[in-house]
Image (cartoon, one colour):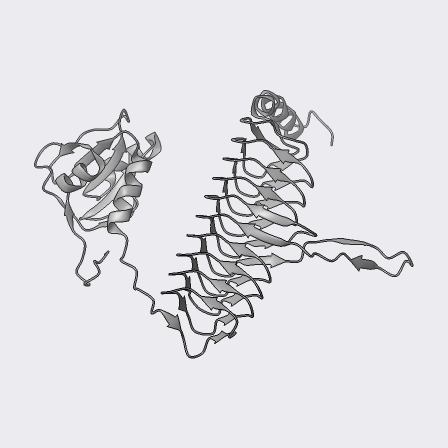
Length: 349
């Protein structure tokens, strides 16, 4: 159950939630909602959400007291006095965001200043109200912006700059000379500024020679980076992440990549060196982008796709190697027929 700052539980009636999300109510407006849960696990007092026909089919057997539902969804409306309610909205996903914000636990404020176990170099600049948690290391010449929180065991390298009102969770590393903009969130074990994967054969045939990476990483304002993600520093110049971009967990951005503004990358996306990703690009989980390619602005890439050539602005690509979606869908029936024939014994491997 969610709680307010004073420790008391959050409780809202359906009518109050309807005003919050501008919803039409089917059923009772007086039902008390104390928490949120998924339809198949929800009980009395729970609010859930319905955005597809699959979810709509679960509603009659769910014990949820109420649900957000996208307008036009085929679903039986509860009667007044039934003890259940639907909040009918234009978009259940967007309404869900508003409700989650209302039910989200109030974060505990972190104390300003440095914990006794933190190590802060005397030449580092710490902004007003910044919180340096237990075990943190802030090296020479680093800057920590006003109101920024380093939660625990965070490492800020020499001459690195962290903007205002950022949150860097446990075990984050922002290495030498890297820059993080205002209002960023870096989740646990993110590493910014590792050396890129750059090697060449030894001219004497004795293995490989490591190529120095003398550049840095620059991250724009309002970026959120998921746990265990890594962004490599450039050989020279900067690896760039545009303002407002959001990465899921386990994303890897290689040296010299340029990622635009307001991009969305799902888990395990990997972008090879010197690639350019335009503004507003969306990539599903486990997408791979080959070295030096360009993904045009507002393009979309389906999960597990392998990008082996440039993607034009605004197009949707999928498959391995990835092709435009219309081409992938056109070939899919033929591929299925081949597989069916082979399984039936009509084709040899």
